[in-house]
Image (cartoon, rainbow, N blue to C red):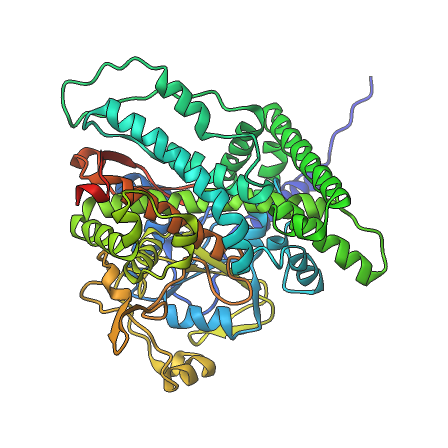
Length: 579
């Protein structure tokens, strides 16, 4: 039997080479701080960077990634820091300064959409325009949906469909309120399902047969109730069985929680999308979207242009693709991956962010009774005819009215909620931010509820700001909130009084709820329409009573959005006749 023995010297060299290689790999995996930008020194010496400290902070404070970096900024006393999240990866720069964020998003062409956000859509909508840099491909895809946010389309097509779904939720809540008899109940799923129904109606038309709220209404009506002994103890309501399509959409939305903040999102998506449940959900979603696109093509072929334009978002997209194909001299691609993903993007992103903002809004209004009462009075005054006739305002009345206090309340809910808790951009070239060098490829995350937004701003030497930021200040574009009440829920901050009376001022102070600039949230106007309709109808029908402290906390979770951990409502029916 032959044997082989490695000479001692050779073996030693091999071992030494392995040790050197391992050490080199270890050194390569260690964080590489960007010179000058403050950071946690201890984390820079760990393979996992800030991750261990972050997890410890989250556990101790019951917080999130956002609360961790906010605490770190305080300890470093800086509006800009860097954290190390991914081994072998670049540092992530965190910014909490509205002036510089505004400048970065609206004037600085050297910054574009970050790969971080694109990675979140990779598994469920890989062809969506949010994953594109601001190039010709991005512009071409945006033309597919360019007419969907016009006032005419939103008011004539989207708003009536949304009101129908909001009224279905009001019916569910009337049944629950009467059964609860003053007991609170969990409301976040109700709002999520209503928002899903609303965005689906916008996408596919008011006649879309699938509903997430209706099964819950049927289940609650059929339920027998045993009320808890204490009025402060919540009542638990039955939940209806969702149909396969809507459950698939909900399942796909929840996959974001598995990817958000993961060091390797692409590998995570590869794993997640191979799960049998998620594979089935993705197929159900794709089959539905293709079916809706096919039906829209048939409607277009059989009807006239006006019918197609004003029926649904999918019809409008089909018409846009037809027009674009004619201009480009090509055949229309009605069922392409781009069409499917752009359509799903509305549903996927729209319902989650809006419902989260509404969850926070209910908490703010329940805990600020004066604001709620003033809002109701403002609505009754603005819709005096509806009040006199003891009815709800019509959709034409709602969309056609300017109610300054309603607009101010909406804006303050969005400011305080921080549903989309950060806005990402990426440096496309070597550049600077607040006087620090930012290497090409570095992602910059701006906190939506950080310093200068919901907390007093850090002091920044004016000389460190960009030339365009300094120029904007000289021209009077330097809005800031009063630091004494910046953390308070106060809609009045958005109101201005002048010769025309009290008006809503959208530029009164910092706001980043939808981002800014060319790459700001495309669905912003749709979200405003939905929130306006919901708040009008909800406050018209119900009084939000304060829930007990145990159910009214402001701790949050960070999944796809910045969600409240506790979202309970305690409702009492009201109406204009009760005034």
